[in-house]
Image (cartoon, rainbow, N blue to C red; front, side, top):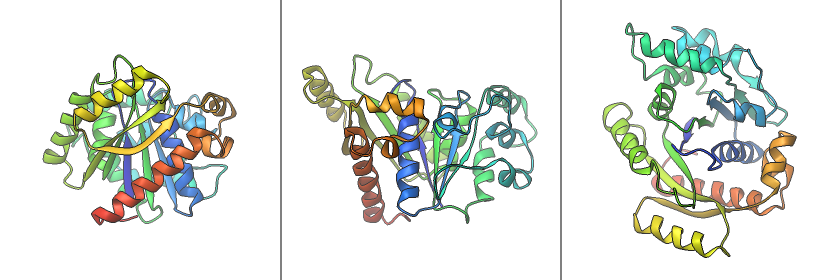
Length: 262
């Protein structure tokens, strides 16, 4: 199972739309996919119509000593073939606090250990993360092989990127030698906007590893959140849906070149 963490310390950059879209596209291609909602807001769960106000999910995984007793109980089937979800809600906030106070066992490997229990059931795990570096996101970085960083071009485009990249590098050095790649890619892109073209040049000049695919702005994206259906299913002919298909194809091609498993 290959694990992808979708992270940016800045909110509103389409992390959840990205996570749900990639998960749906991979599942639609025949891969077995687990979407792990690692944000207390539970938007990824909501986007697949599987969020509950008080049901257990990733919060239990963060606190239990025996994830093997819980993973199969907590993972939920979705309405889409090959796609399951481990949901989240506000209970994760309390769970994270509990983990930080727990000095009896390692804090950073809770998600990694849980995914080990189901690694033979899935080809990919997509982890949607909060716009923060907290114990949950550290757990996601410790568990993943690849990091995808969606970036929206605006006057705060670079906010948090150096800190996040440093965290990725430190995690790879100290906690997760299996963390192989990280890539930045552009979301909500409008090529007719001169300011966005200039912002893109600034990001490229920073020489972060980047995917070529840019997710173009589409009003259908906001509509799909109300429908609780991933954009590639809700509006497959929309600009964003087509771009996410291209993004997944580019990612798979990168894995093939690097020798990663897909």
